[in-house]
Amino acid sequence: MTLQNGLAIAAVSKAFPPGNEWYINRSMNRRSFLRASACASVALAAGARTAFAADAMIDITAHEAGPQISPNLYGQFIEHLGGVIYDGIWVGRDSKISNIDGIRKQFLDDMKRIAVPNFRWPGGCFADGYHWRDGLGEPSKRPRTYNYWQATMPAGYDATETNQFGIHEFMHLCRLTGAEPYLAANMGSGSPREFHDWVQYCNAPVGTVSLASERAANGDKDPFGVRWWGVGNESWGCGGDMNPQEYATLYRRFVTQFPAYDPKPSLVAVGPRGHSKDLDLGWTNGFFEAMEGHHSKIDGLSVHFYTDFRNSAEKVSTFDARGWYDVLREGARMETVIEQHWATMAKYDPQHHTKLVVDEWGVWYPKGEEIAPGYLLSQPLTLRDAMHTAVTLDIFNRHADKLAMANVAQTINCLHSLFLAQGDRFARTPVYYIFEMYRDHMGSRLAKMNIQSQEPMVPSRAGSATMPGLSGSASIRDKQLTVTISNPSLDSSVTARLRLTNGAITEGKGSVLTHTEMTASNTLDHPNEVVLASFPVNIRSSQVEFSIPRHAVVSLELKMA
Ligand code: AHR
Image (tube, rainbow, N blue to C red; front, side, top):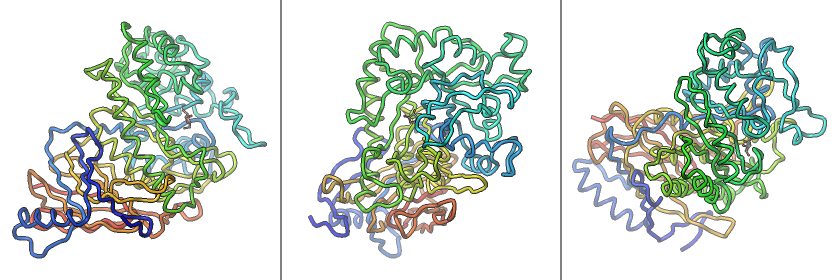
């Protein structure tokens, strides 16, 4: 095997990923692949005018019986951290920056454009020190309080919490964008009582408890109807430094007397640190073991998975081929994390009453490239991170039967952000465009997809490694098929032929996200460097032929007969 331009073809054939019947990526060497695809095209595309030498064959079986891809898999996470809430989202009612009731208008518009399904708030680590009452009432009278992230701020920058953005402002954001709220309760410095009071304040109808009258007096007569409740955050770390047994005991105390107002709650327990080397299966085992014989319901198990390069020399904005592939390969471990924790949960909950909630995910690079001092954890993301997003969202789609929700960390001015904003400057990162391209998957039914493509050998920290040539997912709704595919290769475009095993395609169009430079990025000074372009598809004898450029993500909208 030779390695040219950082890429070679591995002559191994391997199914990827194992155990997922909705998606098979069969890899083979180039010669046997071309032979197979030529035979297939003669047999299946009788009538095709000219031969189209495809590098990849994509077979899709689409019917309405696949699992539904919950829109909630495209969820967002926003925390009182650096420039996420203040400046990113909340600019204030008197701001010169275009806003609606204090919320940045451009943010609202773009959130609606991608049909944001939910926001997780107020943290993160911040949540375990947050007292919801501090964010009520006349804004100028709200207290200034300690923020967990204060200690991490650069010298001279204050991160005292002003509490200008409280539960009413948050709910207003949700209403303006059509998103569902997902609240994280304070288990660190809070109590079951404080949690239950918050539930009553949010959900009790006026005329029942005094907390409902207080909510009405603060401007919201109608209950907020919060369904999603996170019971703590990272209780193995900033949320209390507990072991799973300690957390299980506390979880039961927090949920046993959960106030019974509509809607029926979805309670999410703290789960593993998925980016640990051992995937932290010990947490999942320990927690479920400790819950055995108890009756507290657990609707979701939170998993955090960061593509964690904090302790490396990797840079956000400048990298080589090795850095490109290392980040993408590490990100693709999300699939193993989901599968392994799901299998572990099956030991205790064979019917899978508890679903997975990946409520923090994204790439985390070392400090040093923040967009401005005080904008903690902000990163000038590139095309590499957009590709990582595509690979991750395809993984979520393919595991739609296991996942109830996922939340990218975090939406603006933070780790894996869709936007950067500072004052009146605003940029959509390349990551944003992937959410736009994938929007039609939300609420559709997963279709079976079989990709046969080469499995390239790529440079890596360890010398070299293999990775899938193409990855993707497909879904169907009302005879519209949505197909998303990414080609991570820095060297080669991939020609592909896509066919339906159970029908014909009559029309199609597509969009593509790529750039000549793998390090391309949208900055506050140059916000439109990486943008979507239309993508040509060729429909021939009910099959679709196209060529995916190198380091590109494509999204196809296909009409079935
Ligand atoms: O997203 C940043 C932080 O990462 C969150 O506050 C915490 O939950 C996680 O460790």
